[in-house]
Length: 353
Image (tube, rainbow, N blue to C red):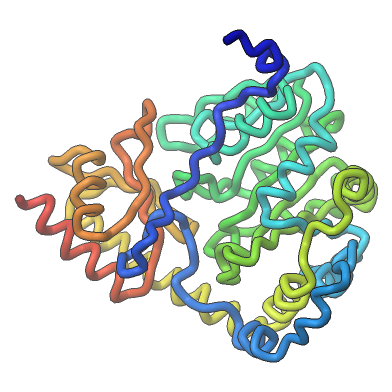
């Protein structure tokens, strides 16, 4: 049967997230989640929340959460946009700002959602190759374009680029919006957030999914000039004003306020990451220096696919992509010290078998 209506369907190759195994008795190191629980006040809110409030629509501007973020990062609330995870924030930014016939630019090895959004919104794009050491060549981003986006630290490599290099790119593109996706910035390096006061065209995006242990609640935010944020809100409120539920708004604000717990858990992950670098090196792995909550490592003597498969047989999940350039690497999220030691024991067995 000839279904003519299908000729008008918007067809794209969807983003494929890391596997979420139904069996919870596993060591899950494949999606960069935080191995520690959220701030204690989040549990208190969930235990005492008045469910009758769920009959009412949530606050459209998520003011409690927005104000908490603004206070924490020293900006005006009008410079903050919140969304349902940083994916929602970036998607809204693509829709709002990447609206010309010129191609947007991002690295060829990066967050694989970028080309998906570009395809969904019919945005032309060009992927710029990373250098051999997985770093960005700023010269690649000093050409005519419809916008720029890349993560810092990068995903899946974990490589951090200096604020000076990023400012050079922003300064060289006054006619484009430049987005820096800082999903992993809390685990090392310096944020570009201070630059938003100097450059009206810079948007910095962060998430609660990693350093604040709230991947299941889906909270992301962007900080930029008041003009950029207003444009994003205009688009958001034209599509769906009530995107973030009431419980999430309240819990997110509580998580932002608990600075000591935030710093404590982030430091635990950093310490375990540095320990894991040493153990992986001892096992013969090679990897770029990671400033994130994962390590992008290539095994010695066995293919990454083989190691990935053997780990999965042992109920240890890491991430592997069957793609050129990176197919010899595994992305290993940082878990607890105990989880990482179990991983290293399994790797010793696999590599020596």
